[in-house]
Image (cartoon, rainbow over all chains, first blue to last red; front, side, top):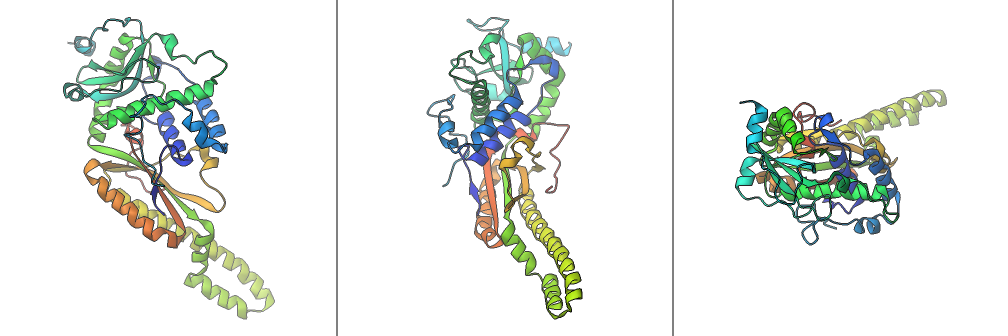
Length: 78
Length: 296
């Protein structure tokens, strides 16, 4: 069946990280300095996704904009 | 006037409390008109307590956070792992872009773009300003949606086995001698595999075709190699994985189309997952991707 998933569903989270980490305009290399090892995030995420406590762990990730954080994000219909 | 001088004329000097040597983290780029329209960026970005700003440069404005470079480094406290910290920052990057995308057209920049100082921002716009402008043109008035279509292999195989070609072979096999039946068995296996491929490609092409028809653009998602293990299994195969750039005024049409699939797909043993709207991450390039491509 068709459905819309929120970032708190495992699949949507993996889609989200895939988009953030792999897509978007790439700034000319020598103008940026690295702030995070992207591979490291993947490793961390894989652990997160394979954990049965995924949902609980996600809820503990601090949100940058409390109260309005989800207004522009996909909604879960289940 | 050189491009650098042109840009320099528009870049604001750092406000009180900002050191000109502050590093600048770039989330994305918006048109200068968004600034003129009074679009208010989120009050916090990837660094706790540090606001998101629109820094004008030429006809564009960069969505950025400014802070000393050390503020962008992982904390050296034992209670937070670097992985958790980095994942949190990546999600914060997304929250900023999602908030901006709900207010105006934004060209997302790939996560992790930290420039050393404002001079680097000037150099950035001198080199890439026109690229950003083209991306903004490309995604104006549209949102990105993600689609994943999974096929239940048992149900698909049943459908393949019920096709006329397979049924004919089965009837032949029942009537054949043991030797010929063995030969026909192999032929039957091949026929089922062939029909299965047909069933699956018809299904994904039909759905991709209808979604692409109401989109400005469509692009297959690059294989998520490191996450791939999460995305399919022996019994549930990912047969369509793509992003669609859909004009905001066709959102309802998209949702109706997906709702229609929701009613018809279970009978075919398939499961369609729609995610979005996303900031246009998958359409934020001008050189690669983005061509109206078929399912892969």
